[in-house]
Amino acid sequence: MISTRRVLLFLAIACTVHGQNVQSIATTASANPRQPALQPRDQRYRLERNDVFEVDFVLTPEFNQTVTIQPDGYISLRGVGDVRVLGQTIPEASASIRAAYDKVLDNPTVVIVLKDFEKPYFVAGGWVGRPGKYDLRGETTLSQAIQVAGGFRDGAKESQVMLFRSVSSDWVEVKTLNIKHLLKGKDVSEDVRLRPGDMFFVPKSGFANVAPFLPYASLGTYFAPSSF
Image 1 (cartoon, rainbow, N blue to C red):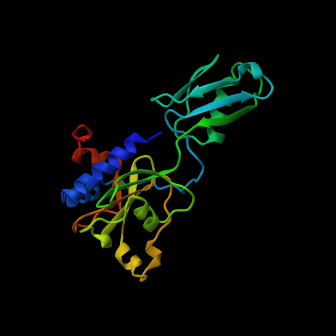
Image 2: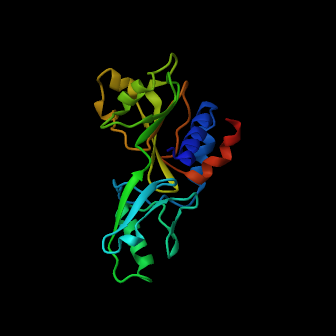
Image 3: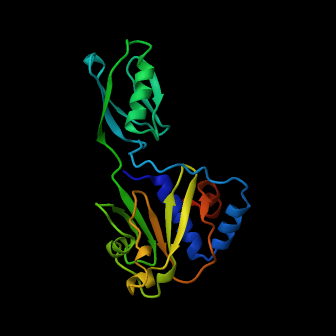
């Protein structure tokens, strides 16, 4: 399953960069007085829309059921109605379901078993051989991911590869990396390990500096998904 919202937002950035309008994005982000509310990164999986999981009740199996997270982030539970679990970890969702059933059961024990969920991925865009969304298998560095995406095309700006990494539900961190030095063995620190959901863009030519953090909400003003 694809996180459509984030993929489209990344493509919005990519198209804007290619159109040499990055300075406008940076200005907009810098003018926003709010700062990203950065949190310590939690590596545990967080539930997404369309995820499917089993809810097992250890002591009352008659309440066992399989649920799907709806587009609005809720699941429908037998006997208690709708509960919002979007973005929660498995332990958090278990607690939410347990709290909902406290109204009809005495101290229920709830176990969640994921059945169908979003697989780890990264997105490659810009001046690479095969832009697109790829499975993230094991530990993959940025240079390896570029090769998976077909390598640099002729004219790619290898010294200004942009890595976009989500830091919250509203903000994305932007890093500009010099892969040209890396390929010459000068600075291996630039070869960062990708995390699930990371996105990178390889420009064809130079562009203005980008603010280190961009709000997701501001990016939609520069790109209409219907134009794809």
